[in-house]
Image (cartoon, rainbow, N blue to C red):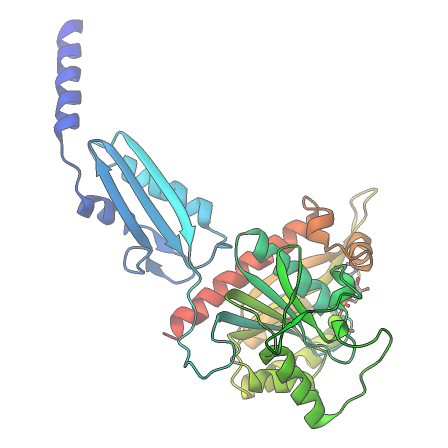
Length: 368
Ligand SMILES: Nc1ncnc2c1ncn2[C@@H]1O[C@H](COP(=O)(O)OP(=O)(O)OP(=O)(O)O)[C@@H](O)[C@H]1O
Ligand SMILES: [Mg+2]
């Protein structure tokens, strides 16, 4: 009886070995994976770049629209599971790659080598735009994206200090400024060009011209994402930016105060009027987690940014807790993500960067 079973098993194995696996079977299996953001299966989305079948071994490459995809690991595991279930498959190798897809651009548009320009805005000053810009840019670069960071706050450029490159002077080649490189990013700021403590007090057309120059006269090269840190509010510089550069979209940063919410609402309306889509809302300084006892204290009373995002019918991308370490690391010129990569705030920035990248993919696929 026992030996009969063994013979049967051996036959079964022989059968599996000779069973031919087809590319169609693999694609059929992979088509069960739905991209949660793009709401389409990954085969129709054109994500499958390669299927190699050699006897019982299957190798496939899945190319995502961003290296910061928040569901990358989940998709990989799903793919392995689904391919393994095909009769005859003995081993599976799934490679995950990414190619950020840009919007359709006409060659005469500004910065043709930059796939996505994302502005970080707020209605109120001091809510953490620059802190968020720096850390999101670093998070995307750490995931393997090519990232630039433009400090468009010409009234009070703070990026050089936050990135620890204050006092550096960009080289000029063929009348173009060469960005300063730090923490894997290409950075440009008026702060590199002004003498220290020389406050810019410019108005109207000069502001527009300066912002345009910082964009256009810098040799950014090929970038997946250019993160633009805007000055607060609805003045000349933020609005000019929305008009002169082809923005993929705007991210609104706010604290959970109701007052901040109504001001943020005004800036969101203005950006939308200028045809700059709002890609999402980030809440900063949400709550304070006591490092000694872990007690969570709500700093600002109010409905919070989540409710604001719902009202605006835009995604809520996440929140960053108030943490003295964030402020300290900015002052020391080392972004929180680099200074304390395993901290709660670093994880918050990584998660938000993933959500933001997903929204950018959605916006660019919708625009095609
Ligand atoms: N999550 C946080 N926890 C603690 N401190 C923070 C946090 N986010 C920002 N800060 C601190 O708050 C201050 C304001 O932040 P930041 O300069 O990023 O704001 P901003 O919106 O860019 O300001 P402005 O409108 O002047 O450009 C800084 O001292 C910064 O270090
Ligand atoms: Mg700022």
